[in-house]
Image (cartoon, rainbow, N blue to C red):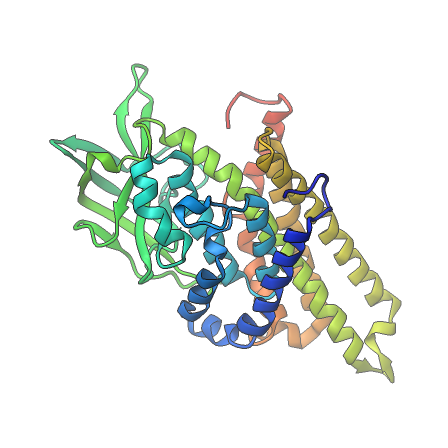
Length: 391
C-alpha cells in the first residue's frame, strides 16, 4: 500500500521503517566506524540486508522479490542513512542501478537469470554510465560495442562505478555506442557484461573523501566479448533507459540525503542534551536551539519532496520534475545540516570516529552523484519550458 498523500505512511511502511531503523542502530552503528576507516566493504552487513529482503523490496515475488514498491526502498534508504551512508548507497546502487534496469528493460530470460540472486543480496549488479572524460555529459559516450559474429566486442572505460569490484558483483551494465544514426548521432545500447569476462578490467578502488565503506572503481574494457543476447532489452535504447534509471535513482538519493540530514538532527539533539558548558546544558542555549530547529525544518521539507516524487512514480504519473526537485532540495539539506552539526559538535565534529564527522564527509557527494545539483536545475528549468528541449 502506497501513501495517499505526502507524509502519510501505511502500517506496512511504518513497520518496514521501524525494522530497518532497528537494524541500523543495533547492527550497523556499532561496527561501521571500523569499516569506514579501513575502507573495507561490509560483507556481513550486506549479507544481513539480503536476509532481511531489502535488496528485493520493489520487485515481484516471482523473481524472488518482496512484492513491495520503490517507496518502500526509499524508506529503507532513509533509515539506513540516518546511521551510515555507505551501507545505504550499497543498497541504493544494488537495487536502483543493478537490479532495476534488468527488471524494467530486460527480457524475461534476463530477469529470470539475474534477478533471484540480486533480490536475495547474494549478488550485486553495477551500472557503468559515467566516463572519465564525460562527467555530466552522459550522452557523449565513447565506449563502443561492435558486432563480431555472435558477440559484442566492448572497448572503452567507465569511472566512479559503485558495487563494481566486490566479491558479490555479478555483472556491470555498460552503456556503449553500437551504431550511428543517419545524422551522425550515436546510437547507444546498454549491454550486460558479466564479471570475470576476459577483457573486463577493474581498476583499484578510489581513495574517497566519503562513502569509505562502499565499493567504487573505474572500469576498462579491452576487446571484452559477450553474446549478442546480452544487450539489455532492445538495441539502441540505452540512452532512453539510462535517463529513466537516473530519474528513479534521484528519488533514492533524495531519500538517502534525508536520512543523513535527519541523522545530523538526531546526533545534535543527543549531544546538546548531554553536553554542558559555562554551567548549563548546551541545549538550553536558544542560539543552538534555533540551529537545530532549522535543521529539522529543512529535513522535513526535503522528506516531503521525496515522498511526493516517489508517490508519483509508484502511481504511474510523470515524476521527472519532482525527482529533480527532491534530489536538489534533499542533497542541499544534507550538506547544510552536516555543516551545522559539525559546528555544533566543535572539535568532536571534526574527528572521523564520530557519526557527525562521517556525515560531513559523506554529504558532499550527494550534490554530485546521480546528476549534479546543476543538472537538477537544468532538468527543472526544461520541465518548465525554458531552454532547449532535452532530458
